[in-house]
Image 1: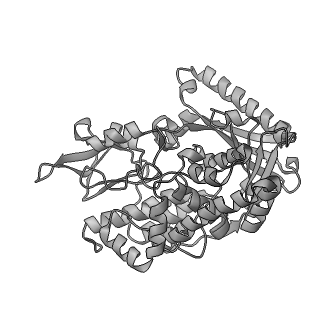
Image 2: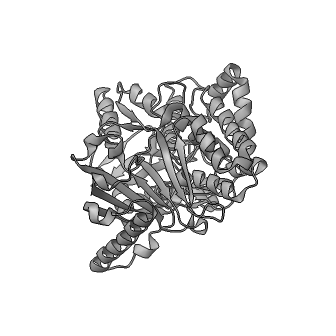
Image 3: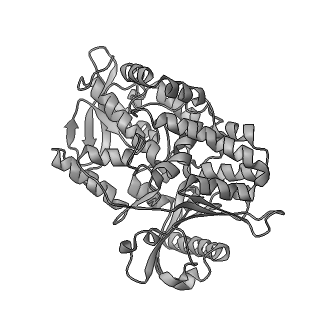
Length: 459
C-alpha cells in the first residue's frame, strides 16, 4: 500500500488521520518526509536529460525549483498554486463534517462566511481550468497533469480543484509523514482504539448481502447484513466501505437498487487497478541522497496508459526499522487493467507476472535505479487480480473516475444513499480519491449517520 501519508499534521482541521486516531484515544509517532515526490519526467528539446523536479516539504523551496525549470512561467506558477492555497486555507478553517447537514452548513457559514464563499466559488471548477487560466507552457501543463494523475488517476482537466487544493497544499502545511513501524500500524492502532471504546472488530467475516425490506412508508430500508456463513446481523444503520459497484451490483438486491445509483454508474467509470512489486533490495544500490517517493515516465503520451507511469516508494529510507540492516523495502507499482490478466492458466499467470515485473525493473534501472535487478534479494508480485481478491473491489479498481469531464465536485454523491439507513463511505463518495479525501468521507459519514439516528443535533 501507499507510504505517502497525508493528514498526520498537528494543526488546523485537515489533519484527519491525527484527528481520527485521537477520537479513539490513539496517537502515532511519525517520520517527516523532506520531499513528497521526486519526479523523473520525459526528455524534451529544452531538457534532453528529462525533467527532474522535487516537491520539497518547504513550499518556497518547491516553487523556487519549479520556477527554475520554467522561469518564463514564474507568475503562472505563483498564481496557480496560490489559488490552491485559497482552497486549502478555506478548508483548513472549517470543521470538516457532513455537507448534507443544513445545521452544520449554517453554523460554518456564520463562523467563516469568507471561507464558505471561497469554496463555493471553486466547487464546480477543475484544476485544469485554473492551470490554463495562468499557464501556457505545454510541458508545465503536462507536469500539472502528472501532479493530479499521481493521486487521482486522471489529468488536471478531470480533477476537481477542491481536491487538488487539499493535496497540493497539505503536503507543505501538515507535511507527508510516515507512521513509525509501517502504514499497517494505522489500522492496528485504530482497531485497538475502537475495541478499547467498546467496539467489536469482526475478522474473516465477509459480507455476502446487505439486507433490505420495505419500511412503513413503503420505501426500501437497509436493516443489516448477511455474512457468507449465513449469519445475519441486524442494525439501525449500515455503512458500506465497498465500491459503489460492489455495493449496488453485488451486495444490494437488484430489486432494491435506486435509480440514483444506476445514474452514478453512467457518470463514473472504474479507474484501473495496479501491478505491484514488493521487493527487498541491498541498501547500497540506491543513488546517493535517494528520496522515499519517485514517479517516473519516459513519454508524456503514455501518462495514462496501462503500465505507463511508474511509482516507487522506499519507506525504509524514512524508517529503517521496517527493513533488516543493510536492506531497503522497495515498492514499485503502475496502473494496470484486469482484462489482460483474465483467462490465464496458473502457469501462464505466473509467467506473465514474472515477465511484466522484469520489464518494469529494467525500465527503473534505465531511468534512475541502475543495478536494481542484481541487488534484489526478495520479490513478490501482485496484479489487478490480487487487488480484487484481497481488497474485495470489483476488478481491483482504485476507485471511480468521471466518464466525461466533470463540473468539479458537483456530481460526486454524498454518504447518504436513497436506500434508507444505508450509507456509503470511501472513494466512491464526496470528495473522492486520495488518503485525506477518503478520511474526510469517514468524518462526514459518521456525522450524517449520527444526526439521522438522533445522536447529534441537526435540522
